[in-house]
Image (tube, rainbow, N blue to C red; front, top):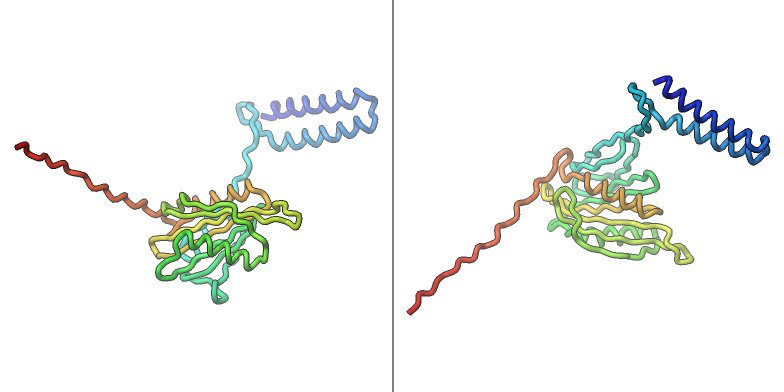
Length: 239
């Protein structure tokens, strides 16, 4: 393993020396040498030599994921991300209603839940979250689309997308809202993910909704479809 790494270092060093000798050491060459040296150092950190001498790129250290389950549901979040809980009408969140807020990697998450009779439909949760967010931020949100087809812990849901614009009319933020109802406790949920860039917002939304659990630590069973009635043909006797 040591010999293989030395070969890589020797090749990199030879490249640096060759580049330095090409142009007599002028300022431009020095800059190229410094740039190449930095790239070589980064490459050395990214390469791992196995015991059999085969080089491979180092695997990034995975981020530990924890399930947030303080209020009965399960939400997957990186263990180094802090979630802040708050009540809807009062100061503190409860199992009957509340919200959690978190920000990480250029995206923000807001999850709201409440228990009313009858439960809010998934569409009502999406519209309600959109209106609340708009009133709280005083930002000008522009709805872009909405639809059904979202599935959260085997439950059907709805979604909506929106953008914010600056004073020149340029899009400076994007957001996705999802809504659903959990059958185990009849609570309505709405999750909103926002950010400057579309790709991380989409990735975060998919990750969070795919990992959400109506009941912490458990996956809801998929309801069996009701069998369609079978038509029975009756023969009419000929006369």
